[in-house]
Every structure is written in C-alpha cells, then in structure tokens.
Image 1 (spheres, rainbow, N blue to C red):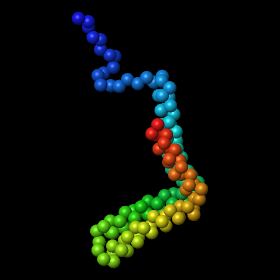
Image 2 (image 1 turned 90 degrees about the vertical axis):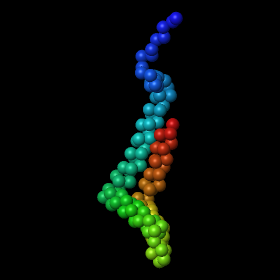
Image 3 (image 1 turned 30 degrees about the vertical axis):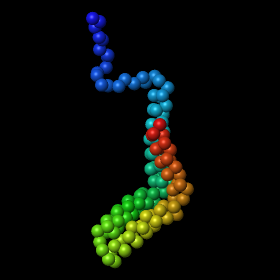
Image 4 (image 1 turned 180 degrees about the vertical axis):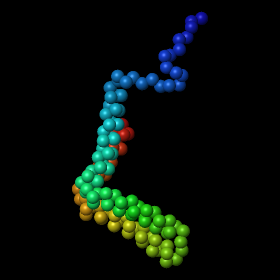
Length: 123
C-alpha cells in the first residue's frame, strides 16, 4: 500500500499562486479601488477647505434630520405626519443643492470616483 503524502499546508486552507497574472491584476484592482475611494472622500474636503468640512457636517446633520423626519412620518398621525413627510423630502434636496452650489464639479466627480472604486473592487 502506497503511503499518502500530506500537503505542506494545513487541511482546508486554499493555496494561492502569487506568481499568476490574475493575482497581480487583483492586487492592482484593489489598490485602484482604495485610491479611488480615498480620493472620492478627500477631494471635496480638500477642494472646499473649511467649507468642505462644514459641508460634511451639513450632510451629516441633513441625514440625521431626514432619518428623524422619516421616523416621525411612520410613527405620528395627523398634521405631524404630513409636516414630517415634507421635511423628509425637503431636507435631502436642500443638502444636495448646497453641495452643488458650493462644490460644483467636485460634486459630479466624487460619485464617478465611487463608481470606479466599486467597479475595481469587484474585479
């Protein structure tokens, strides 16, 4: 009976050939995804300077107000529900207009960079 040799790696662990061209493509795709995501976050902050930081705070506050308004819309009755629904619709619109007026082309470029990051990360 022939003796079976054990592989040099533990059972259940996948072995990866790090010299394969696919491995190198995956590494560069991951680097591209991280760089695009970092640039998408840092570009508005860098371009806007202090306004970029204030816009970040305005965006976070707008998200909190919208979440609270949606909650009130779902849990209240009567006029409070209607006012909360209007607030939930108006707040994101105001935040987006604020971003577009202040940042202009950066507001368009940032989602494109996010799309590149997601696409590269899925490769």
